[in-house]
Length: 84
Image (cartoon, rainbow, N blue to C red; front, side):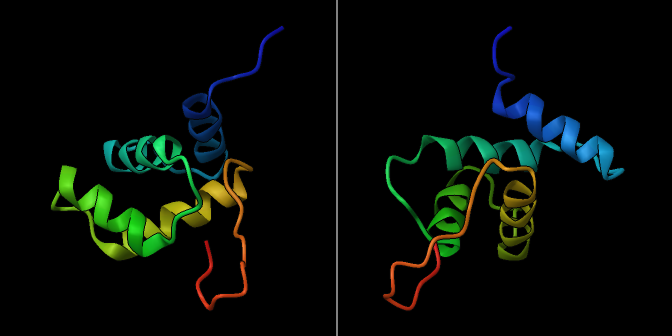
């Protein structure tokens, strides 16, 4: 048996919470997974905004929280005042 991919994990998690896997959520997940380093929510927002100007900063924060709850991300404190 092989592991589920991240989109499947997110879709199933959202379904259990009564939420949908929207194109905006999938875009944020895709951009998050493409990063090779730890980035802040603000940095991710700047990246996502280049692909879809309709996505707001609050949406990025909410999706990051969902990704953490789903086990696809975690918040890391490097002691520099910015959580990543």
